[in-house]
Length: 473
Ligand code: 5AD
Ligand code: SF4
Image (tube, rainbow, N blue to C red; front, side, top):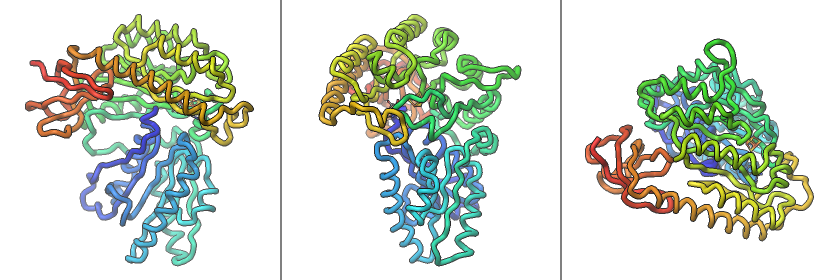
């Protein structure tokens, strides 16, 4: 989930409703892939109203800031961005136009009214569960603005929690899908790790019915997707309504998706070690379309810290799960998330994290300094670790993880596998795709197109990517 902390942006330029492309919509997306997915859905909901995506907020008719509460100082950063956007709104008003400003996502959910109070230039505040009502909110915001033109306008707040409604009302898009698409299958989290805001901002776990997901997956494949990544804050806790009305788990969902002929690859993220069931491990053994790469955050390598984090498993449980996964799928590559400097983490606890990393061997990983999130239990724990100590531990952990990533990439030199081509490379005739292990792979296209799955041989490996040559199919 850590692509996670990068800044991302919806970049699609136009919508399929032709005539109505009169209004421009800019969406700034922070946070995880679920936010990227939500931003795309918001664009879909607004497309029939004539909004087409643009890649700059300057002059846009509507700007949505889709926020992430996991970012450090998330609320403060949101307020400063809203302040900067106010200047663009003023410029637009000087030109006789109006820029509608909406704040979405987890900060919107958490701050609600406070945003409307502190940033009166905001027209709409909507939580992650109310995107389908965006057109209605927009109409209400416009009516409010028209009624009191020139005065400060009271914004519209909609941060309710029922997740089902949102999925029921989201339209499917007619736009071509990229070769690799995201599909949200589960939202929310009931785990309450003591450092994390997600259970508060995204609410209780909710899983979409299997049939709805299959429908959306078939639609994505019909529009060109060859790979689907199933998204959920706690995706392997998925328990949706199955075909027979009983519950279906993630293993059943993956098996059902694998039946879609033109779908070549299935991935899912993010998983909790506790929910790595025997059935799901078996699916990794049996289902070729399930890619041999798993993001399985452990956060820390000391039982004491894991308990304080309320992770509900021990180090030995995690190592056992990894061993069972690797027995089922020997080439499985692992990725993880780590937090260093959790309150009370001693030097020995940290060494235990390094030892766990050594024992597992990660292909890729994300690591963070613990940072207190207001309202979470860990924020008020005694024994907060000194900032310099956290930096030191993070640097040591990252050096180890970087070395493992490099070694993992190096070990694939000479390997042969298929690459799903996703985008043009920087050099002429070059395309970039992903290996089964999610590595970026650069190659000379030689007639192959984006969306093709081509057999390659790996020639060279770097820290973050591979160079490969095509083999005859
Ligand atoms: N401090 C540091 N890292 C955090 N994460 C979540 N909350 C915090 C926090 N308070 C990290 C976890 C999680 C990832 C998405 O972000 O490692 O798995
Ligand atoms: Fe946050 Fe823990 Fe839930 Fe992951 S499992 S979303 S870290 S509370």
